[in-house]
Length: 530
Image (tube, rainbow, N blue to C red; front, top):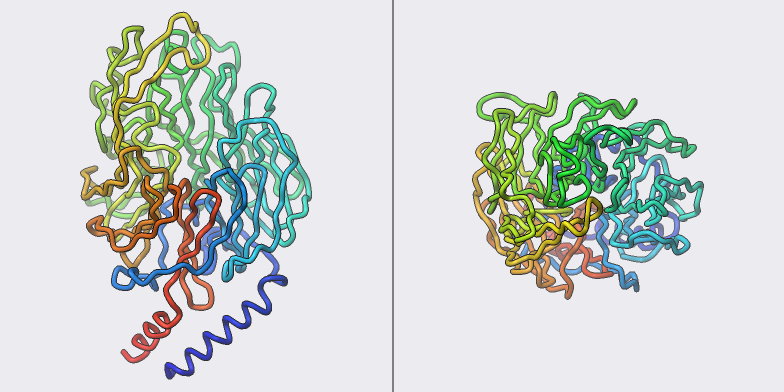
């Protein structure tokens, strides 16, 4: 094929997209097969696929040409709320959210197709992580604990149901996880006497299929409440298990009323998505007294681990420890710190950290690493199996924790004062837990997730409002662009009409980046000539 012919084909493709796609997009019909094996022109779930690796096989944008990356389009929401959602891409349409709002935007041009605004609600408006999609329907959580199903083509509402009672202190932020005929959602909340749970909803009717509670029934001796399920989990179709992280117990900094490990708070759990039955649980922070949720992404990786083929689960947890588990049974393969950690006496034979009682909050204060925000938090990591790296936005930090007896046995029951913190993108060798490289992203820390690609690029952001493209092999900056506000979401990528886009956000603006059309045509021509 000649270069001229190829450029003509690109021009026809662009013309077709301008004429057809903005107002008559194809039916949004995401089935179980597409969720299982997303095509390159799709990002149909929160993590992109069920594994949580946030790794793309696209290779058009490379370390050699990423310096030419430019702005393809930008969409301004006009909202003061920050975009914290991970955008979905289905049939040429991008879907993203802030609390009480969903936008559908043409993925080629940034033209708005529709905008849905939910009536104002109570509940915490801290952010919204995005939507789920299945068979032409979107699923969206509101701050006051409702799940809304909308038509993906026009944003009209099909039904709305109650998931959690906001008057009791619950609220919701997460992007639903769709597994076969189950829409699985979790809850948020920071008050005492609230039970964390996951609930499975019928995608057509909104009927509850099952509920799994992360804490024991009320009245159980020496038990706790808490264990919120803030962030979207992952799924292994071969084992038919859903993996999820749970939050901290309550009262938060006072563990005297809840002796023992406080299962299943601060844990990684494996559930059967058809029944909600617990297959296994691994407690990341036994008897947590520092507010270190374990809701960070449980990333699923298949491959060799120290000479043996394994189905692995990996988590860089908020408490400062990196875990590798055998996800068939929850057994520990590796537990190591990936930054300053001073609250443990070591690790037991089963890979659980052993809390140091002298590092529990006290009236005269305790010097703790990491701080209450944790060594990482909500931001999504990425795994590049070719490099053998687990890459995470980390926050090295120290703080003073205080217990406040006057606060009694409820709520926060103490205080935390951050002393110092620094944001770094860390590349962890998941065979050993050693840090292969680190890239500083700002003293205050950043809020961006991480995306890696087969071409050897790592996309993320820093604390100063820059979008970054790093070399995955060594962490060196290859490209950056200033956007004004630090990214609070995770990058995604997709390819349409032979053109790869990277999506990032800044404040209330969504940005799409791509190579110039002439560079794409030149690359195609060179490939054909080989």
